Length: 616
Image (cartoon, rainbow, N blue to C red; front, side, top):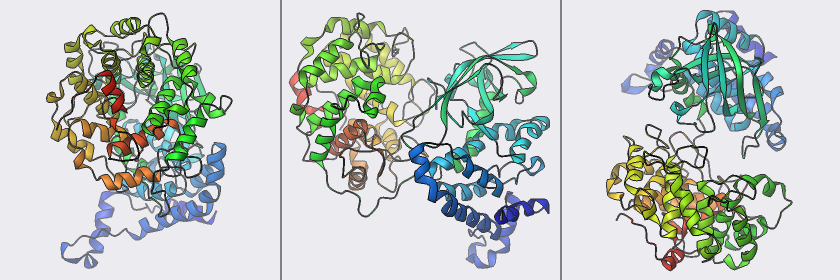
């Protein structure tokens, strides 16, 4: 409690912790005598140092001793959150007039950085409050701020930012949740996904479409609402089993005829998109302090081929294993990942050919498409994976190829795009899946290639990259799919290779690893998507290959085999394939050459007579 009194006493006596730009400038000017000829100091003020030290002390004494236990159990760390709240280490950015400390973004970063050092799971749970509260801070009226921000400083409550949906993450403009005005209320229907603090929140910020005209610009189509979590019609889904940050509470939330009073609209109807973007602008800096990893001196530095082969060979045999059962929803792609990496390592003979062929045949539906597992719905992604597997085994005659072609052809839309399945989601990833499938089957002429190219090119951004739909943020995964698509359709000349190459090379971090977009951690999977894209456009020599190789090798598990997303995390077949494939692109002599467009061994493509275009 002594530490709590230190923070609270400052508020009670009217002393504001260093927060405003004016105060910061004043402090800097006061210390200019120590700043040299420039007359400006980059030293922290005494007050900033005090709460940085307080956060550091809390992280080491309260968080680190229990971090591993919370990560193992996945239990929500409310006892730690409550202690942090008592010390003023969360909600510090809430304005003073509503009970907070009014900290600046930089001040908040100083605290966040210290807490994240101890445990990113606990820190994410705490920092999610900032994202949920920010729309109210920047756009709420006085009554809304008193009601919803005030209660956060009176007791340790959580809130959540409900924007992401199954088909709209970074692509906020594509959200489908609708709010219809009925009298003095708005009736909301829709589904949100990956909502941090979703099951623990006292209230939500909700973004919903209020103008149902699909041609209405995003700046006018969406409205921001404050929604009490106990409002009838809100259904909170199960806690997601995160691959990392396991104690953070992440859930899907369904809104079914949820009535929201008009008093809970932020600013006015149609202002929601700008509010949501403003919240991102104000919370991404403190929310992304840990942007890289530190490689340990004793991290693996040699390729552990035998262990990786043993890991993959054993993975598919553990039918009762929890992890294997959990991955049923992506089983077909999982088999592709495992078989491809085994082929690259020269170990494909260790896999059960007949069992795999029988499984693939059982997953083909009457429509011609393939599903992830037996009894699941067909999808373009799993159709591509099935065809890739059969190409590895030279066994395309085991399936009805003509029906596959008809399935793919039937998913092309009038604008040239492809839906992923009969439910109609549009994404440039599916354009790649479609043309890759048909290219492997030698049936590219069965679709309207010109219209398909027009759609993909319409998704090119000012930075040279591509998003999932026109106007969506550039992302390395979509860039790989679009460059691969343009390679297969003979349209790579439409790219600005230098501009795109610059964007891709900016993804390399000091550790040597690559991320998928700005302000994200490095991940072994981007050692494939970024590197393969650079190979396709002839700019792979722009990357620091030795540092990237060091990062990839550090992500191996020396005991079990396999690759993880980052050093020390849990391994899986997905990252194992992309780790080995990335090393192949870097010239690793112990594995086969991999094709950067289709992520398949080059000798397989030579056998079927397919050589996608590459820029030099």
